Length: 478
Image (cartoon, rainbow, N blue to C red; front, side, top):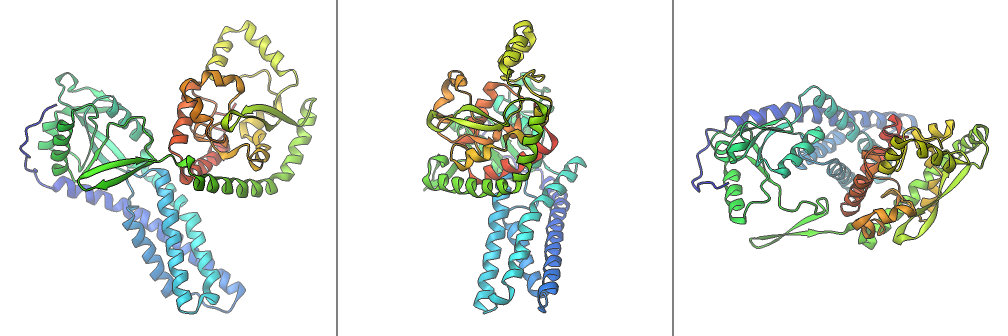
């Protein structure tokens, strides 16, 4: 994969200019969405002031602060925000909005007007905080479905890492990076397709005739000198250059770069080992679970009555599960199975090899003879797991975390045991929102490991939001 050291001259920056022009309308659409949310928030403030006081809404001041908010979002790179993960967007949106709220409160406090405008300011920024991101997601979905969102990129290298990268980008169009061409110096690969992306030439071809303004370099197996040469040349040719380092399997959301002169080191943070992080996570668990319990108490009564009418037996079921540091605990659920559930399962698996294979692979059955008619509905909507809020309050579970494992599954965890047992299991988690009842046991272990090694409060919030969507559509539940 060698390259000559002479840097070719660019055939002009017209491709880059065209790319900027095509991104401008997309940025403008997202910006207009933010403006619409800002006007909606202002309208609510006007209604609030008209109904509670004789104060007039200060439109001139509001326009100034709304403009500063949009300028700050542009500085954060949120227009159009290509290449940012959902949790990065959530973090930038939340932190940026709270920063502007704090700045405006400080300004009115300095002007001795805080007692007049505090409630109005708090209301307007709360509305922006709650609605700006959903509106952004909606507009982006519309643009994606219309084929109008995303920046085209070139993939440099056609190895297994490139295949994984292309798959991820195609599977997550919200990243806004669309691979359209791949390059590799292996003659045998010319003309092949990688996840539908054609290999159109060598690395020299990519440098001589760049088709996109962004390149994604994926050559982790190359020698250091070769990588440095390739990176320097593509950096000089393409406006934006991303490099996939030789760090496959390393926690990628927990990386923090540090500069020591001309040397760059990467700190790999074990976020969940931090006392502060565990305190924040536990506080969120207690506050949210208490609020939810207060709201759903009437549903507890209704569900309990229906369970009693559906089949004989208790309302609640205590399942033995493995928790933090390998300690077992009673995991509470609404009963969704018959009292003789295990006998029903044994009888089915004894005479059905296909069902036996399905159960051995997934540890579940799509048509499970143990589940009652109402229990099937409870599982499909995840209502059977509401009593686990009690486990959360008791500290045995968290709102988000690896799914609690059965004691008999410990022997099948292989090398994952220590990592999984180092954290509190959750009511929902990364596996549940991505696979739920689908996927293999090994896939579940890998997803749990990803969550543990890449944890952040923003990842938890994203998972909680995705859980609502998954439950509403009943994705993968049985």
